[in-house]
Length: 272
Image 1 (tube, rainbow, N blue to C red):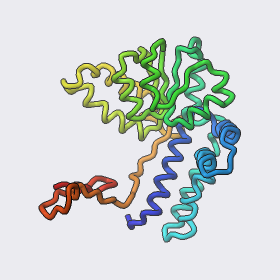
Image 2: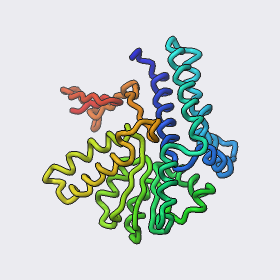
Image 3: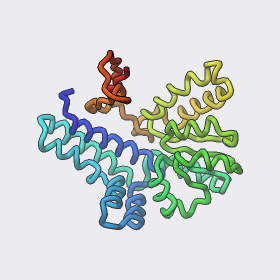
């Protein structure tokens, strides 16, 4: 509220880390061991990837606020709370525990099961981890889900950290299998459920209405109404960032006429 853009970005990065870790498909300790093996170089790229799975490194910017900002007490309290919460996810995260129980079911640890995770780096870590090597399932990130579906031959898809990209692929692919499980944090699931609602009701989306309704139900089973202590993560804080100006009136030379300004959460866009 005070217009501290640096502090707001630190909070947003912290929340991104917390959501990523809560939705990891493997325990945090196993993820750290694996990432240390895969990305052991001293360059900024590998160091940044290692930081994705290390609370102290990810929480560093927020901890700095605790020392330099007038709101330092709140920042220090937040860092301590997050560290205590994440400390309990060494063996299993909220999502990895559910995923492991699903794969342990009869007939699920097969090549007919596809696991889709949010990011390419997480997919690489899962594939190289001990549990990933023991699983016979396919593993892709959300960006590659559509192409994986197109290959066919799947009995089910398990999506961790459901995103708009993954939902779009599942809704539109003619090869989506009959069984889809969505495992994710409650805040992200709530946003997706709100977007799926009109798709199940509006006539223009009739071809995907049945799938949209089924995915709403899957989101609910995957943690939409659950809290962190019950195995899911829910974070309800609006990211604060200073608006950036995008001027679309300058193309073709100097423009001195009237402008229309549209304000979005992160941008202010000027049109002729």
